[in-house]
Structure formats: structure tokens, C-alpha cells
Image (cartoon, rainbow over the protein chains, first blue to last red):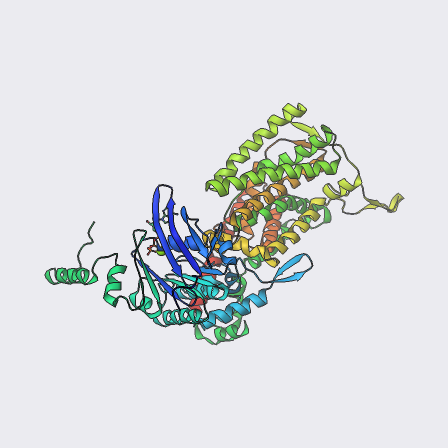
Length: 275
Length: 362
Ligand SMILES: Nc1ncnc2c1ncn2[C@@H]1O[C@H](COP(=O)(O)OP(=O)(O)OP(=O)(O)O)[C@@H](O)[C@H]1O
Ligand SMILES: [Mg+2]
């Protein structure tokens, strides 16, 4: 993977403000085919806002976005989807009172044509949904008619990921996909990310877990208060350095030493959070 | 399906197979609405048999009533599934009637042009509702409460300005419009002593209701758009992120409910040969009751057309059926209140079962 080829998706000096609130400042980022870009940063750093801009939920206030070197403008999520960008957002993504099959295809329903009347192809939807969800390691789901409300949080998350993997043709964006998952399912997701990478997709992966980032990332970008604070390739920084950057620039070792020191002098109580 | 079933019946916690199918039935609220209808029908059938509840004339009394509520209740159900409400229908019913009457009487339109014009006016009001709700994020209850009064005011004001009256007349405009929008009293078969009137007391709104129900059943349960409505009510942000045009869809649903209300107003005007500007506040409650009794969740995200049809039939019987029994007429409000409470409790039970039972069972 040489650096001089055209990135699949690129942001050039993108700003995003919500009214008076500036959330992103001059973000320039590239993600290449067959590579995983790990987007790291503290809570509220602007990671979700960034990927929502890439998936057409928000429009940049300034700056431009390019796909395969051509300027693109996504007015709505559908525009990004049609370019092959599939996103798993941090929250939601499933509908509790709808079946597994209907959830999986919400917005992209398979149809059977009967003249001018379109018919939702329930059987096909259920079959593919169950197949794809099982591929994610959720073998407990065997019935596509089952309501998603009865599934666990992690199972729902896996369904949302399976859906994005199924529909993402060029770019796969995952916003904290492993947050709700058990060790085994998280491993599955990491495996799926690597598989997507091998298939030549560009992947953007947001996580707060250093281990997960290290396991799949080829390229890391750290956001601090809406600006790119560091942008480096795999191997350029140690695990400790990455952890420090993820904590928003503070030294993790210092933070930990602080807490331990406090606990020793205060009968094992943790310190009150500073306000 | 079969695989999961056998597993479930094998597990010790789930008991015998019959209890499972009962649970399954509970998880289909249209089955609950159907069961409720059967119970209520038997109840009133038993107590009303002396007063002709079961005769054609008796049945048509509550069927005619139910059909008018039902034509509006199904689009209202769509809105409620999508997480919205529309109470402006109370003013759109008279608006539909007076626009038709004024078009024919005052502007000299042909009746069908009048019907078309009335639909266009209603669609425009529905569009305004939809635009206000999607652009301002003000809850639809408040938006449509405002348009309810605005339209009610316009009904009376424009009636007086344009036609100088709030009571418009609409003369018969031929058998075809009478059959499609009115009733069949003029349809006499045979002659002399053997002459009889088919559908002597049943009104066309009954058949319109069936047509609306079939069309809406297709949209919600067969076509892919039904998925969009359900998804929008389940989680609007996720639906929008999934590429569903939630704003357009919502506006379309408000237009649909407004047009359905206008249609009912038109049938009433054709039947009575008059159209009045009186706002039908009662219909606001009636439609919402039918939708809830029909198993649609107030929180959105779930509902069926079949359930709403049964809910409306049940409501029609309770509302009108009291007249066929020896009970005091004042009791029908009490019956309806009780019915609504039972329905809401059942809907809650359904939701809890649907979102928890399957994890507990394994
Ligand atoms: N629609 C919005 N309107 C106004 N402010 C917003 C909006 N969306 C996000 N923000 C603000 O932007 C900032 C960044 O939010 P964002 O969700 O992108 O953070 P994040 O990096 O994803 O955090 P987390 O790790 O907690 O998910 C926050 O301060 C948030 O309040
Ligand atoms: Mg986030």
C-alpha cells in the first residue's frame, strides 16, 4: 500500500459548526483502500461528528470532501450510501419492534415486483439477515421474524454491524462498534474488520480501547477538541504513547499513579472527580 | 421458525406447546383486537337481540358509524406508528364537506371536480401540518391543535365571506356520485310488490372503508414503504441515517390523514345534501380510541391495519350498540373508557413480551 495512490475518501480542511458551536476545525484526513484508519480521542472530541459528516448526516460548514480524488457533496445519508459508504453509528441503528429481517434491510428493502406493485421480499430479507448475523458470531439468531427488542444490546449491535458490512461496498465506518460487546463478539468484529480490509474496503474505526485499535489499525488519527492532534502510521508510536493521546494528551501513567497514590492514603477510596 | 420453536418447547421454562402458542397469540396485537371484537359482539348480540342488533338494519347502524371513523383511523394509525398525532382532522371533516358543497353550489363545478378540489385543499392543509412538524420540531399534537383551530376558523369565516352562510346545500348530482359517496336507497331491484332495495341502509362509506383498509394494508404490510413507517416510529434518527426520507414520508402521512378526513366530510355532505362548518371534536377522540384499541402503540414503532379495523368495529359496536340494549345510554361513555384502558394495558403487555420474552425463554 503505497502512500501516493488516490485515497478512497479524503477530507480537506473541513470545519463543522452547529450554530455558534465549533466542533471540528480544519480536519484533513485520508483513508486508503485496504486500510483501517483508527480515529481516537477523548469523549466529546468530535469523532462522531466527523464520521457523521463523512456519511452525509451532517454537511461540512467549510472545506471539501473527495472520493477517489473527485469532490463529493452528501446532502443526505442516502447520497453517501449510494457511493458505497456504510456506517454503524454510535447509538441506535436498530428498531426494537421490528423483526430481524426488517431491521436488517430498513431503508434498502429487497422487493419482488408484481407489475407496478412492489412487494417486500420477507423470505429473502430474513434469510440474508440471519445468514449475515450468524457470520458475526451470533449463532443464537435463527429466526428472521423474531423481534429485535428481544435481543441483547450486543446482539443488536452485531446486527447493525452485519448490516453495514453487507451494504458497504467501498467504505465501512464503525463508531465504537465494540463498546457493547463481549470479548468473543469483539474479537469477531475485529476479525470482520480485518476481513473487510483484505477485501479492499477502506475502514474507519472509532474505539476507546487501545488493544482494539492496535489490533486492526494501519493508520491512526487522534482528535483533541475537534482538531487533529496526531496522525501517524502503525508502528510509529508505542502503546503507551497512543494511550496518552487517547486520554486527550494527558499521561495515562500520571493519571493512574495519581489514583493509586490517593487510594493508598485514603483507605482504598478513589478520588472525587475534579470539577 | 421451526428450529427455534422446537428448541423453545424443549426448554423446561416454557411449558407445554399450547402455552407457547398462546404467548404467540399475545404477541400479535391484532389477534387481541380481534378477540376483543368477538367478545363485544357476542355481548351486545346477546343483550341486543330483542332490539334488532343483529338484523341488517341494526348492523348497518354501527357499521356506517364505524366506517366513517375507520376511514380516518387508519391514516391516523400510520401517523401514530410513525410517532406523530393529527388532531386537525376534526376541522378537516367539515372542510372537506363545505369545499365540495361550495365548489358545486357556488362555483358551479361538476361534482367530481369538486371532489378533486376538496382533496387538493385537504392535501395542502396536510402538507402545512407536515412541514410545520418536520421543520420546527414542535410536537405534532401542538401543531395540529393549532391547525385544528385555524382551519375551524377558516371554515366558518370563508363560508360566510364566499357563500354568506355556514350551512351549505348540496343537491343530488346523479346516481353515480350518490352510489360512490352516498348510499344505495335509490337502487331498487324488481318492481311492484317484489321490488326490494339492496343495501337498504348500508352507506357507501362502508365500501370506501374496505378499499382504504386494503390499500393501507398493502402499504404498511406488503410494500417496502411500510418498513419505512415502522422504522421511523421505532427510531427516527436511525431511520434517517439509514437513508429513509423521514421528512418527506411524514409530510405524506399528514397529507393522507387530512385527505381521509376530507373524504369522510364529502360522504356526509353527499348523504345529507348539506354541509355544515361545525367542527367535529368528537371524531378526534374517536379515531385515537380506535387506533389504540386496535393495538397501535402510543409510543410508535408498531401497529397493524387489521388491528385498527377490529378496533374500529369494536368501538362502533360499543358506541352505537348501547341503543340496542336495555342499558342506560349514558353508560356507553363508561364502556368506551373501560375498553380504552383494557386496550392500553394489553398493548403494554404486548410490548413488554415482545421486547423481553425471547431473551427470557432461552
Ligand atoms: N447536533 C449538535 N449540535 C450541537 N452540538 C453538537 C451536536 N452534535 C455534537 N455536538 C457537540 O460536539 C462535540 C463533539 O461531539 P461528538 O459526539 O462528535 O464527540 P465524540 O468524540 O464522538 O465523543 P464520544 O467519545 O463521547 O462518543 C460535543 O461537545 C457535542 O456536544
Ligand atoms: Mg461519539
